[in-house]
Structure formats: structure tokens, C-alpha cells
Length: 229
Image (cartoon, rainbow, N blue to C red; front, top):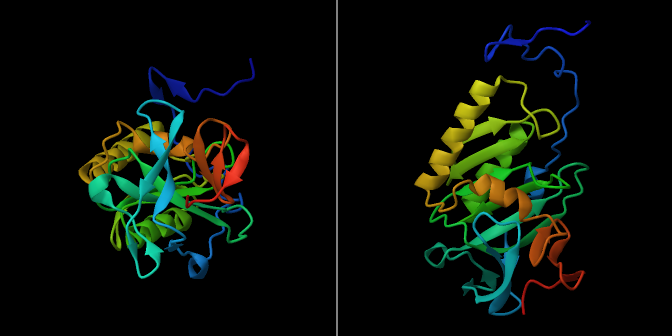
């Protein structure tokens, strides 16, 4: 037997935090100067990702979007939120922008680098300022999950190992995740776990409509489609 005892009776034998992972390179490369969530309106109706609770499938919806001075806006009163997918591995600056319905946020934003299978930085929010705050909070943490309202970071769960894993114990991760969920629900999220749902909204192999850093994908037609109809 050459294994090493790390847990006994449901608890860790010793604290292994930061023993192996500090040397790993950062994998979140976001230029704040290129972070722009403005959506130029090329029409009054847009394709919208319709979230189905507890499902990986989404609806392919068409909704009228509010437009001010040529720019399309979120409409949280109608549960019409902005969504962004930001390429974060190579710092290309690619940002896919769209709209999502069914998350339920009435204010603020959520962000995460857990996004199957590319694990880019995904943000959903009721306003651009909150989206920027949440995205930058995740980038500053080296990856992870965040909730923000306006310019205030409400809670962050750092996932510094490739933006996907934590080097903290399970109890700490559990408590921090619960705080994130509590804050997202306080901001109006109706989904039991909006972060889990968000992690699949950018997976462009599951019907019907998904968003990537290259734009909207109509999965049933196997093609990138314009945001505006």
C-alpha cells in the first residue's frame, strides 16, 4: 500500500491548500479596456435563448427588445436579460452578445468560467455595469463564480485551477457557493441553481439556441445566426 491518507471519518486529515497549485499559470486573460457589453440594434426583434428549468435544452425564441439611441437594452421587468460569452484563454477579445429569458434576475449580474465545454467567461445580467463588475471579479480571482450589483461585488468563489477547480476544502467551497446562490436569488433569480444553468447556455451542441464567443448558434440548423431577426 503506497497511498497517502488524506481523509478520515468524513474530514480531512490535514490541510492541503496551496501545496501544489500556486505555480500553475493564470488562465483568465481579459482586457478590461475591451470589455464592452453594448449591443448595436439592427432591428427591433432579436433571437433569445429561452431557459427551460432543470433542462439542458433551450427554446429558440424571438422577442421584441427595447432600443435606446440605436442600442438594444435588457428588460428585466420582462425577464429579458443580456448574456455575454467572453473568450478568456488566449485574450483574443472575442465577445459573443445576446439575450436570455428564464433566469429571472431583476437586477445585478452573475458570471462564471465554468461553461462546458470551452469554459469561457459567461455573464448574464440586468445592466451593463453589473455585468462588467461580475466579469472583472471573476477575472481578478483567476476564474470562478461571482455575483455583482452595480459596481459592488456581492460574492465571489475563486477557482484558480484553470478557472474550474478550487484549492480550498470542500466545506469552504460549499459555503461560498451557497452564498453565491443566496445572493443571486436575492437579485431575483428564479432558477434553483442559475450558475449550473448558465454553464450550459454556451454549449453549442445541445438544441436549440446557444451563445458562444463567436455569436449565436442555431444548433438544429448547425449554423451561426444573426442576433436580430
